[in-house]
Structures are given as structure tokens and as C-alpha cells.
Amino acid sequence: MPTLSTSSQIPDQTGRTFVITGAAGGIGKAAASALAARGARVILAVRDQAMGRAAVRDIGGRAEARALDLASLASIREFADGLREPVDVLVNNAGAMTAARQETRDGFESQFGVHHLGHFALTNLLLDRVTGRVVTISSSAHRSARIDFEDLQWERRPYRPFGAYGQSKLANLLFTSALQRRLTEAGSPVIATAAHPGWASTGFRITSGNRLFDTLMAIGTPLLAHGPEGGALPTLLASTGEVPAGSFAGPSRFGGVRGPATLAEPSPRANDPETAGRLWEVSERLTGTGFPLAANAPAGPREP
Image (cartoon, rainbow, N blue to C red):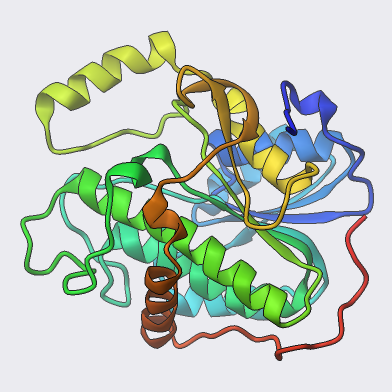
């Protein structure tokens, strides 16, 4: 069973390029810092350019920041059009939680729009340049979630922030499994993996809509959670470790809350091929993007 206890254990990444969304802070920045320390070129795909530039100064090495707003399909296309060189690993990391229902620029419920649809579109638009892996960050919140195809955008149901968050994170895992199936069918050497950080203290604020729960989380997080570096270990394992295609990495202790990263088992709903296929079709229609590789295409060079 692959395990990662510290970022110093990841192999040398000299000559490799990583694109990490939402890497201006938190787990994304911690992962970028660890990869840069091992020689990687890291592209921080961030909405806030001032924060991105500050992160680049902190990380040093071959780090750079580029503008990407996952709440805008136009911004996603612009970012993809501007990135013409090969990318070894794409890390779909960016995330947020909103207490009230909000919409992206394209009219999607913001959590589903950013976490799933934005990363779905970005991946499909970049996939012909990805040579190694697509890593998508989910959450243990996916375990209590389901995909409501009758109301994906929470337009008719009473809005529940944590419910919307969980649905988007379940969508991340269904996307990973559907993407891997398409990569295999296309004969591509690229693999899709996923990870979750456990309970991490990163400045990410949980807004479930339940005042008592949110207060308990705010009190418990600095006492019980690990920091961004610990939360980034599953991302680093999924990005650089000897893990199988379609795998899911997470913390190994206290029921997946914290500790060294290892392989985890997602919920049965996350492995349902019928739901994954239906979600893929809906996502193609909503984003206007699709899987760009031809079936049974010749495999290119495999990642080292």
C-alpha cells in the first residue's frame, strides 16, 4: 500500500510541469511549494492575481501565476488557450463554500459550477496537452451526498450549503472514474486519480447553514485538524506516487481525518458507472466541452 508521510519523500520532479488550480493559499499552495522544492515547474492557476504573485514569491523556484476564474467558462477557455506547452500533471484543487446560494457567471450554482463543471471544462480543454495525470481533489463530504439530476443547480430545493458542497465533491469522484474509463478506451497513458485532504486547517471556512455545527467546526479545527502541509500529502501522493489509475488518496488515521496519506475507499455512489456516465453527458452539455481524445488513439510516451 503506497504511503506518504512527508513531502520530502516524493521523488525528484525536475523537468516536470504541474498546473494547480486554487494554489494561492491553503492545500494548493502547500502542494505547489512541495513540488517546487523537488524541482518541478508549478503553474498556479488562480483567480486573485495579487495573491498568486505573493504565493509565487513565497514558493520561489520555477513557480508562476496565471489568471483562471473557474466560475467563468470564458476565463477557463482563455487560460487553456494560453497554455500551449505540455503539462505533466493537472491538479484540480480549487474550492470554496458559500453560506447562501450563489451563481457563477454562466448561471451555475457556484459550488457545483466551480468544483465540478469548471474543472470538467478545464480538464477537457487541456487534456490533449496532459502527459501524465489528472488529479481531482474531493472531500469526505461526498459520502453523505447524492447527485440530484432533477435539480443539479439547487433552483427548486431549499438551499443547503453543505449538501451542495457534498454533491459537488461526489461529482468530482464520478468525474474521475468516468474520465479514467475514457482514457483507457482511448489507449491514453494518462491516468486520472483523486484525493481528499481529511480535516485540514487552511482558512477554508465551513458554512453548513447550521450555526451550532459551524461553531463546533470553528472551535475544533485549530485543535484537531492538521495544517496545509499535512492536508496536501494526499494530493502529492495522487500526483506523484505509485498509485493505480482511478485511485483515491486520503489521510490514513482516525477514519481518514489526518495522518500520512494512503489509498482510501470512496463511497459506493462514487463508483456507480451509470451515474458517472449520466453526469458526464450533462456536464458536456452545460459546459460545451467534451473528451478530446479519439478512441484507440496511439499511446504517447508514458510518464516516468
